[in-house]
Amino acid sequence: MNEPGRAIPAILVEDARKTYPGSGGFLSRRRPPVEAVAGVSLTVERGETLAIVGESGSGKSTLARMLVGLVEPTGGRFEIEGRDAASLRAAGPRAYGRAIQYVFQDPIASLNPRKTIRRILGGVLKRVAGLAEEGARAERMAELMRAVDMDPAALDRFAHEFSGGQAQRIAIARALAAEAAVVVLDEPVSALDVSVQAQVLVLLDDLKRRFSLTYLFISHDLAVVEAVADRVAVMRAGRIVEVEDGATLFRAPREAYTRELLASARRLDG
Image 1 (cartoon, rainbow, N blue to C red):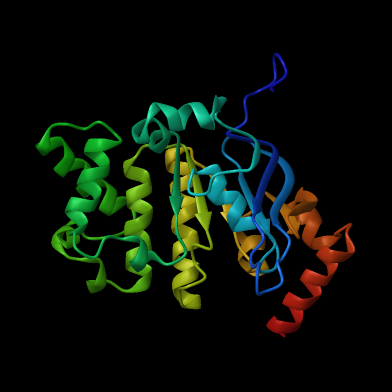
Image 2 (cartoon, helix red, strand yellow):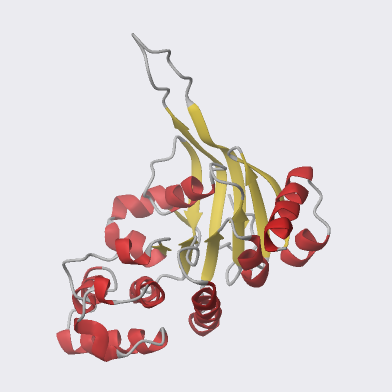
């Protein structure tokens, strides 16, 4: 719980846990349960970008998906801007969607292939943002497209007609449409070419300042994280092993595991 007089963080996670049941049995040897997230606690302050890094299977995406309600936690407590996440979920998709949004790794797969971009954005504006009047929705959709450097004339096209970078811009516009102040970005540029990655990262930074957003940024790419993160949390085997401000972590990591990650990334870059 928050201490009296202390600013309420955008995200509060206390002792988050996710255990998947073991598999097998009868003719095959039964495997024990898998603890994907094992007692994680963290805070993300308003206006901050906290990056969570770690190798594949470290639990970082599972943690993010629990936070936005895509994965049911085994245990723990989650708050979004001081509101209990379980209570938000009970209040319905509109309440939860206005509190927090999620941008997926694969932008084209995350957009409904049977709907135009106008229908996708319009649905969020109507159901989540509560914008009932059609003319107001049309005006807002045009504003959102321009905010992510896209031509509003593209609203009547389908997701498969766009490049990966364009589709990710539209996915970001969909998150903005909900008017949530907290956005979870799960490997948002890993599926894009390097030159396009840089453009999208610049866009995200601009939107963060313009709309007073808070980001939880999930990534395995330490070069990307170094460019965007205010603080970095390092995960290993479902646990956070180190949390530090970005400059300090990349200059002088405390934990051996973090040093191994950095050394591996530098070898790949070299």
